[in-house]
Figure 1 (cartoon, rainbow, N blue to C red):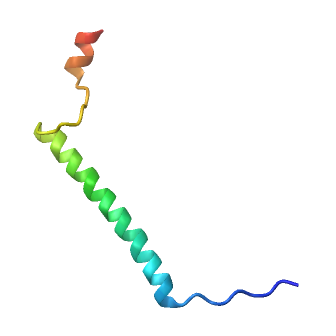
Figure 2 (cartoon, rainbow, N blue to C red; figure 1 turned 90 degrees about the vertical axis):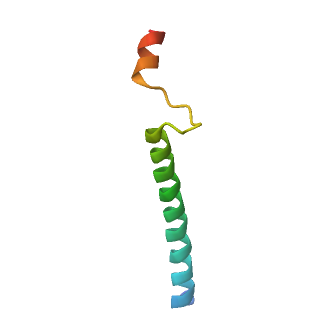
Length: 57
């Protein structure tokens, strides 16, 4: 017969959620930073522009 599991404490639950939210916030910050870098033209990220695509065609 199945035995009920023990209840997870609120502190453990909150700790897990805080970690998950922190990871999401870090990724969002990186994406925003990359976007700003691309728009400003200071990026080392290779991003094809329409001019380069037309020249290759």
